[in-house]
Length: 316
Ligand code: FAQ
Image (cartoon, rainbow, N blue to C red):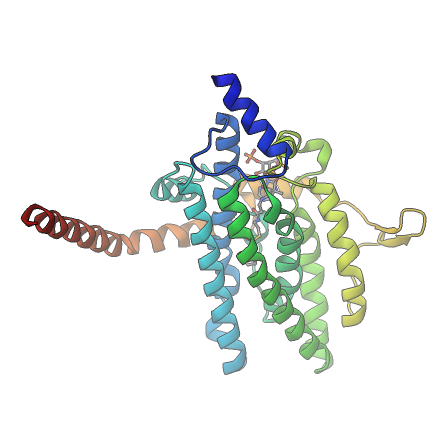
């Protein structure tokens, strides 16, 4: 019986069909999905902070409205993803506690500060750009609810990327000071954006198994290369450069060669030692604590509704 279930699971995965919440799945598959989807959800929620920092100081009403909508979209992405973890038996409250107690990770990228408004554009272009590169293949991930959430998320991320690029094009057509702000921002975000794809394949602990289960469809290095290939022509069109002396077209490979990010810095940020880690978690913790009364009110309302329903059914 157990063998039959395992065989059916393997066949479904190999046929590129979807595993659904009520299907049998190996424990490791369930755990891996909860780990990855929860980290992804936490990233969307913590990822609201760096850009949220600029909502009250956006340079025009138009830019403020765009930024507000983008940050709200990220909240929505977090919620779709928490819902996907719930289909696997995870508890949202428990995941939130794991995040604020530092027991679950979120993307390293959100531990860097946003120093100027150009950072809003560069996050849209490079951070959402890297997210899209990573997430488009996840629309074909083997777990149905995650794959379906990713389709919607990718559509919205692609709008985010374009709004970032449009903001940067506007700044590049402005004054020399604005162009300098854009270049400075690109210099600060380029390497952290490359780190978003995770450690080099040789150091990645999860890739092999995740690819065998078709949760991940590409390795970290493959996606990083794709992102570099995609970003260089965009930088040229914009009129900025990337801070990498090793970056050059390799005719033989038909791809760009590029240098490696500082992996010691990456691990330090992942372990909580980045510039903004403590601030991001403290902010999330406060928002969670401040929202306790809303959750209590919602739970009390749900309980009351259930009681009313029970009385109604008893009377019928
Ligand atoms: N940061 O074995 P691997 C967004 C950890 S996009 C922190 O290679 P895996 C949109 C990894 O968890 C950002 N930790 O791991 C947005 C593992 O530790 P563990 C979120 C990282 O899972 C834009 C260890 O290192 N996107 O939010 C990072 O196979 C703008 C070894 O690594 C996703 O999460 C990192 N960068 O591959 C929002 C996409 N990289 O868990 C607002 C879905 C690795 O064993 C504004 N996730 N680690 O303790 C994935 O595709 C994968 O999980 C990877 C990592 C590619 C991130």
